[in-house]
Image 1 (cartoon, rainbow, N blue to C red):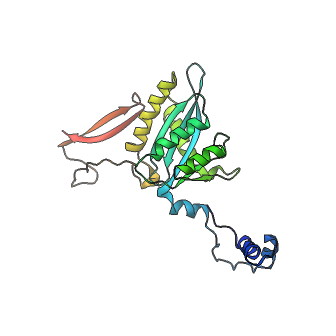
Image 2: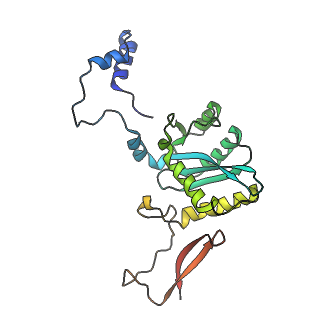
Image 3: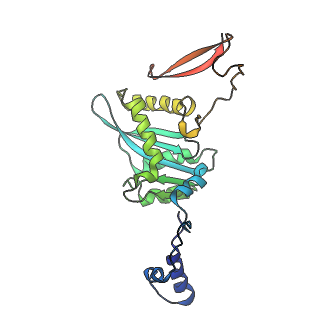
Length: 241
């Protein structure tokens, strides 16, 4: 994932090439200090995410409570680059086998993904990671006590709660799955994202008609409001008057 330190690299070279065993700390002791203002030699995590954003998937779980106080687990998978939610599902008993089936559905998509980022939850077992690697994805586990490494999933789960789960109480597992499917479509196709410019992960294919004014539309068009989740949200579009 990230390049190892220069002192570790030198110690490894001495051991493998010359048979000299020396501690990386000893190498670090005799290495000259880095001049002020000079960039580090390894690859920062933020730089790695920026360079490989189009090929990174991130996944995580969140908890939802039904009207009869039944606990359900929501699993989401999101693309790092375009912020597109590519998969979401609900289960009562999350297991490694169930999680692997969800990731297999994502791996069969046309897009060529390279990395899968997840936290250190026990459900992401070593066996699950090996199966994911067999699908052609390299697993990236977030470091201990570093939730910001998987901040995108944390943000989208927070958005899911603020825009859906905090306002609608699911009645059952199938009801929550329907709510999640509707909200994901709204998240990908109708909800503007400031991090995209602003933009939409799946922008409409129909171009907006040109207007002589930036602030007004002609009388030949009207605005149509499409209610989402029973009117909790709305999507707006131009139609001929």
